[in-house]
Amino acid sequence: MSAPALSSPHYRRIAEMLRLTLASGALRPGDRMISARKLAEREQVSLPTALEALRCLETEGLIVARPRSGYFVQQISTVPSSHSSSGPVSVSMSALARSLFSSAETRLVPLGAALPDPAWLPTATLQRALQAAGRRLDAHGQSYSLPPGRADLRSKIAARAAQWGAQFGADEVIITAGATQALRLALHAVCQPGDIVAIEQPAYFGTLMLLEDLGLQALQIPTDPVEGLLLEPLAEAIQHHQPAAVLASPTVQNPLGASMPVARKQELVTLLESAGIPLIEDDVYGDLAGEGQRPPACKAFDRNGNVIYCSSLSKTLAPGWRIGWIAAGRYHDQVLQARMAGDWAGSPLLEAAASEVLASGDYDRHLRRLKTRINQGVRTIITQVRASFPAGTRVRAPAAGFLLWVELPQHTDALEVHRRALEKGIGISPGPLFAPEAELSHYLRLNCANPATPQLLSAVDQIGAICHQLLPQADVAWISDR
Image (tube, rainbow, N blue to C red; front, side, top):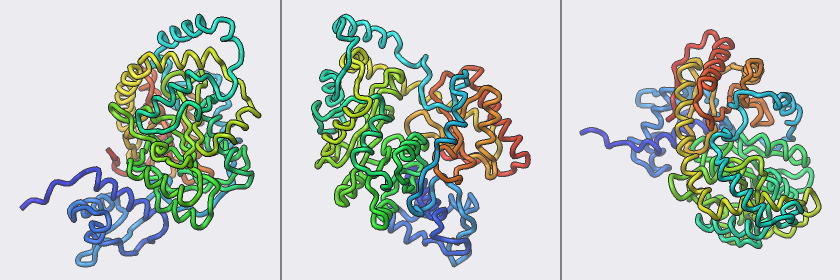
C-alpha cells in the first residue's frame, strides 16, 4: 500500500523548524535528532509527514540516518536568523547605512530599495485626487494639518481596518509622516534610553537604525521564513530579559516576506498582554497579503489596547506623500503628545487626497492590479536568479510582498557583491543591513516590484556574474524552497 499523500506546507514547515533548532546550537554534530514518531506526535501530523521533514534535512546534508538508530546531526544549518537569542545588543547601523546609500541620488537599477516601481503606481488617480482635494480645500490646502490629522482620512483608515477585524475608531488614529515616524513615536511612548526591545531576526534595517538613534538595545528573536516570529524563543527571552516592547511585522515581514498564521498572531497578542509588554506592530506591507480580503493584523485581537498599530500608504500607493498612521491603544495620549512635540505639522492637501482615494474604491482596484504585477515580478526574478546565480544559492518565493531574500553560497561576501554591483549602476540590499552582527554576510534582498525590462533582467544576470567571480569553485547543487 502506498503511503498517504503528504501535505507539503506541513512537512516544509516542520523541516524549517528543525533547521532553526540545529542553527540555534541546541544540538551539536553527533547528537541524536528527535525520532520521527515523537516528531509526529509533537507537531500533530502523520508519521509519513514527519519522516519527509527529516528526509529534507538529510538531503541537505544536515543530518544522517543510521540504521536502527535514527537520525543524527551532521552539520549546522545557516538559515537566516535561525540562531537563538543570545541577549540584547547595542545597535550600530548608521555608518553602514550611510556607506551603502551615499549614492542614493544616482539612478540605479532599483533592486535594492523596497518600493514599487513608479510605473506601477496609479499616477492618474493620484493626480485626480490631488486636484479634487485642492478645489475642495482652496487656500486651506496650503496651511497645516494639526495632530491627530484630518478627521476624514482617520475615518477612512479606521473603516478599512474594521474590514479585517480591528476595533479602533477614527478618534484613536493619529496621522504621521509615514510608518517610520509612527514606529518612532511608538518606541518613544513606551521605552526609555537603554531599554531592551525584542525584534525579529533578521529585521528591517530602518528598525535597527531607529533603535540606535533612540539609544535602545536589540533583543533578536529567531524568525521563521514561513511562519514569522517564533513564539517559543520569544517567551524564553521575555523570562530572561523582560524587554520594554516587542517590535515586529507579523504580516509580510521585511526582509523574509514571512506572515504569521492567524492563530499564532492571537497567541502573540495573548503572550504579550499577559506579560505586560506592548506590541508595536509594523503593518506597512499588510495590504499586499491575501488574494481577496487581507488577513487580520495582530491589532484585530487586541482587546486591552496593548497593540500599537503602525502602517502607511508608502509601499502600496504613494511613497512620496508620506501618509502613515498609528493607532496606539492605551498609549494614545503619550503618542499624541510626542507627535505634537516633534515634527507635528502634516499636509492637509495630501491627507485630503489620500482620503479621496480610499473613499472612491480606486485604492482597492489598484491593489488588485499591483498584487498581480508583484506576483509576476517575483516569479520573473526567481527564474532569472536560478538561471544566473551560482550553484548552492537558496531562494524562497515569499507568500506575499515583493521582497526576495536570497542566500548565496557560503563565504560569498554580500557587501562586496553590493560594492561591485554599485559600480555597474545596480542597487541591491546586502544581508548585513538586516542584523547588528555579521551572520547574514552571504545574503541579499532583492526588490521584485519592477517591470521585467531587458535592463532589469540584465542587472540580475550581472549580479549573478559577480557572485560567480567571488565563488569560482561553487559546486553545491541548487537548493529550491518553493
